[in-house]
Length: 311
Image 1 (cartoon, one colour):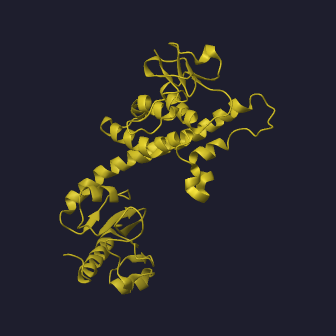
Image 2 (image 1 turned 60 degrees about the vertical axis):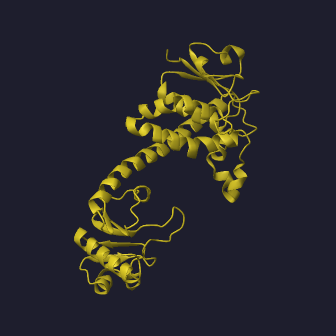
Image 3 (image 1 turned 90 degrees about the vertical axis):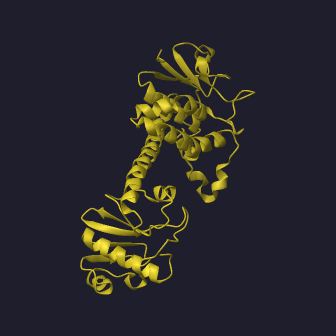
């Protein structure tokens, strides 16, 4: 049966039960959040899901705590927080309820777990310190969510519950945005794969719109591709392809003679009518039309090959 209550602890809140609440309230929107440590609430019953409190982990009885001796561990030995446990058992249902295609659910579940859920688990258990982020420590998501707690001398007895629900809305926006980005990357991957197939052994990848393309290019082993062309609003752009996830080193730079030029100066330098802009860093250029962008791309390919890139 669907739970009538979602039970977590009272008092100060942390990222793990907030983010768990994001998942559970999406799946059970009619359930009431109860923040309590009273035995009558934190004892398993058919009408509730209990998380981050209660001293037990028993998915069958719908209680998901991680503070007890013998607390659950991931297969690799890393600790769960309540968020990790809730994501393990309810994450796929959450993704289905978010209208992800069934074929994408497992991939998004796994990637979100590793990149978003696990760090929260580790921080909550003291296995990872935000201090490892250096000056950005206070800007990590767990730290930011905790800044939403009431100050120590707040006298309103409802302040903690009110702050919890305000923080819940903010936490929800981060989860939904991250899931949306992951889903979009998978949609883009399919479109890029189709474009790679159309490009064949050509050096230019033409896409129907701007989208993440490098992961699909790497996955396809399309090492021959040098530049990407796609429409952008009322013009077209031409970009290079980074060699690695980090850094700005490209497989091929745009011609040095184009760097920093615009409009008539750029048209004169490249000989393409409609060329409008080339960044001084030579990683992106723009043109008025598709034909102009493709012509610029071909010139950039020709120069790259002339400078010694493999034919």
